[in-house]
Structure formats: C-alpha cells, structure tokens
Length: 387
Length: 244
Figure 1 (tube, each protein chain N blue to C red):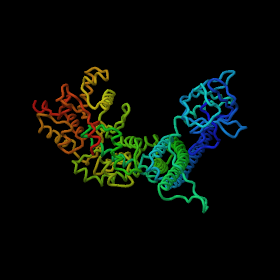
Figure 2: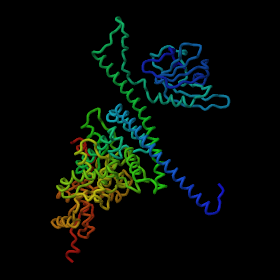
Figure 3: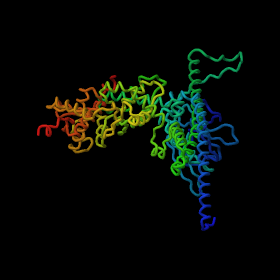
Figure 4: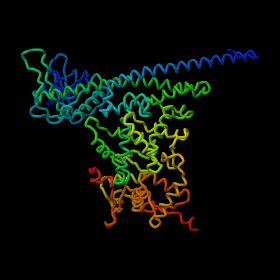
C-alpha cells in the first residue's frame, strides 16, 4: 500500500488511457483498506484510483508491478487481482501510507470486469511504454507576439520536423488501412458474385454463350480469382496469354539458340522481365504463355521433363540428337565418368538442364549411372555397345 | 400444382420449363451485367486507392503484408497475373516479380558455394544492401515471391528448420534427417560423424548416410585431411556470408 502516491488526475506526456473499471476496492496485502468503491483507470504508464467525491487520485507506477495474479470470486467475495510489487524508489512522492509490511496489493472488482482488466494490465506491463523516450513536441505559438516563437532551426527544430513527419506517416498509414478495408469489402462482394456466376456456368453449360464466358474469365483474371470450374473446361489462358506467347517466342528465339537451343523456364522468366523493365509478367503468366506456344506453331516450345523441370527449346529440336551429343561427351570421359556438375561446366548449361540430359540419356539406354558417396556419375553404356 | 395426365399436361410442363430456363438466363445475364457494373465501380475505387496509397505498398513492408493477407482472406490473388487490376494500378506485381528475378539470380550466383541452400537472412541482407533504406524488403516479401516462383518448376522453396529459414534452389527433396543435420550444422559449423551422432543421438550409420547425401548434392564438403574426416557446410561459412 505504500507504493501508491497522491497525484492529479490528468495524464502526463505520452500517456494514454487503456481501460477503466468501477467499483474497485483497494486491499493492502490481504487487509481491506478504506479506499472503497472507486473508479480505476489503467493507462500505459500507471494505475489511477479515484473516488468520485475527490479530485485527486492515487497513482501506482506500472514499473513497480512484478506479477499479476487473479483470485476468482466466491459466493461472498468478488473476483480480485493480486499485484506483486517491487520496492518503491526513494523519489516516490507522498502517499496515503508511509510504510507497509506487505509487498502486494489486491484490487477487488465489486462490479465485475476483472478478466478484461487483467488482460489490459498485462498488455500494458508487457509494452513498457514508460521506458520509451518521447520526443517533446513544442507547442506552436498562437499568433502572440510575446511568448516563444516556433523554433524551426537547430536541434529542436529538427526534432520537431521528425515528429511531425512521424505523425503524418502514422496518419497516412491509418488512412491507408481504412481505405484498404473498404476496398477489400468491395472485392469480397465481387468474389461472391463471381462464385455464383461460375456455379451457373457449371450447371447450365450449354446456355452460357462463349462471349459471356470469355468476358467472365477476363474479369476473373483481372481480379486474380482462381475459379476451378472455368479452369477445367477452358484452361487458364486468355487472349492476353496468346499475345504473350508470341511476344516471348519472338524476343527469346535468338538467346535460346545461343545457349544451345534449350533454356530453363525460370531463366526465360528472368530474361523476359529484365527485357521488359516495367509491367512485369507474373510466373504464372509466363508459364501459361509457354504452354500455348505449341498450339500456335511458334519457333519455341515448352517441354516438361518427368521430374517436373520445365524448359523452353527451339521447335524441331531433335531429342535424339541431344542424346547423341551427351553420349559423345560421356565417351570422352570414359575413365572418370561425368557428373551433372561436370557436364554443366563443360557445356556451359545450367545444372538442372545437365542433370536432365544425363537422365534422358540413361532412359534411352545410352548411359549408365554410378551412385556413390562421391556423387552421381554417368558413363557410356558399354554393355550395349560392346556386347 | 397438381400433376395432370395427358398430352396437354406434358405440353404445359414443357412450356413452364422453357419459361423457367428463360428466366434463368435472364437472371444470369443480369448477374453478368451486375458484375460488369461492379467491376467498373471497383476499378474506380482501386484507382483512387492507388493515387493515395501506391507509395505505401512500395515503402512499407507491414502494409504489404496486411494487404496480401486481406486479399488471401477473401480469395483473391493479387499476384496471379501481371494483367490483373492489382498489378496494373497498384504496381504490386512489379514489386514481387522483380524480387523473384533477383532471387533467382542470387541463387544461381551463390549455388556453386553453398550447393543451392541459402539462409533467408543472407538473402535479405544481400538484397537489402542494394536497395534504398526506405525501400527495404522483409522476410514475408521473400517468402511470397518464392511461392510464386514454384510454378516455373525450378524447385525453389522455403524450408524452415528450427529457428531459421532456408531457400532451397536444388532439385530433389531433403528429408527430415537432412534438415535436422543442417540445423545442427548451423550451430556448430562443421562436424565429424562421431560428433554428430553423439549430439543428435543417432547411430553412426544414420549420420553417415545423411551426410553422404548432402555431400552428393554439394551442400556439404568433406575434409579428408582431418582424422577422422570432418564435414563442412559452405552455406554457413562466415566468408560466404560476408563476401560479395
């Protein structure tokens, strides 16, 4: 009880009210005190207790609270919060009790609200806002000639500018979040509407015209909604992707030839986006576009290996020729064998591609593997060629 | 309506069904019209939002994360296509796709050293070094960008082991054993078969097998001049993380 001190009811700089409760009785340890039926305010720095008839409050700084426990109320007693307190600093102003033998107090919630208050109290203690340094904001002068001018220069001026900017950013962000919430509300309605339209399409597939469906699918693409129904029947590609397919194959025909006729899809993604600079393509855009290449008989094709690796290669690239070239490389390293890393370094191709080529050669029975702790190495298939 | 018998009843029923179908298509057309109207309204609102807050998206990682989470909660993927409203007007796409390109390039550049396994923190540090201080990226941004890259089939993914997260850009999967050993490697930097077996409580054979695999894919290096042979993990080398 000796940690409480008399103070005014106004808040200090940087202090904000977190929550309040009525009908609070203060206990010194386990003993009741005469401070009953008061209004308790929790701020981010202190606890303030005040009786209606008085103007001054009892304050308790939150830095002194070591532990908060709760005692459930029974038939005759109300729920209580038990606050274990640290020793008060010598500089503590005068309070109602000079010294107390108890190092804990209790707050009795005669009118309820105990658990929510406990939550707020623990949050406030966890935040430790009183330790944060508050940059003092100088009040602007209100057009008076006497009294201080608003200081724009020097360190105070800089601090003022920083704080003003911080406040402005905070304001902006909270506005931004508000606007974002409204925007999301609109978007949510449209997602709902699109679901019901796609259900209609599923049920009456003969009656929805192709134009309408195309329009609907372009809306889905604009919003970024993934609709399984239309995806199954029509695929995810739209006019936009057809256009992209042509663009990619035109732009990358030469580069692909330069690297030997085959390029990893991730490499394609990087190159086309670097070339574009602005209005970049999403990975899905690139993938859908490349899937369409074969349909349009373009100069590049997408090829997917069994392991899931995807490459873009020049149309008409003969798989057999590729295998032959790989086997040639193997033959020149008959003694040691060739690992994926070796092939990648020698032929200047990415590691994934080298691996796929070796596996492809193995599938065609032109190469054999040797797996050991030295790594995975491939050799020409002498069982076939020499037997 | 009481069912009646006879040809007349069948004909009436058919007329009724046709009328229902017609009404159905009418309603559906209305729905599509309604959607068109709503799209226009949404587009206007999004434009307004963009003029006010486009910068927030670029500069504030917290705002970006909030934005992505809200989109996900209503079932919308703002990064699905560069042609979508979100990308065209807010420029969200450019941010993440560019990040994807940078990640791919970074992984290719460092894979000869770390075998295709790189710490998320190192990625953040390297990429943020090149960016302006008010344009920094967060780990949430990187994770989302990597998720998007998966459709390209290059096997890139984010894996969490214990306290830290890695970006794997190697093909093939790593099992629980491999990731546990990597976690161990992160704390000690290098290990022998015996030291790993005793600290993890595994059999030596199990440790040997796991280390073999990591050796094969290039994540671990073996020093045979040490007796017994010790294993090192370039992904965690101090020199690797500070060198450019």
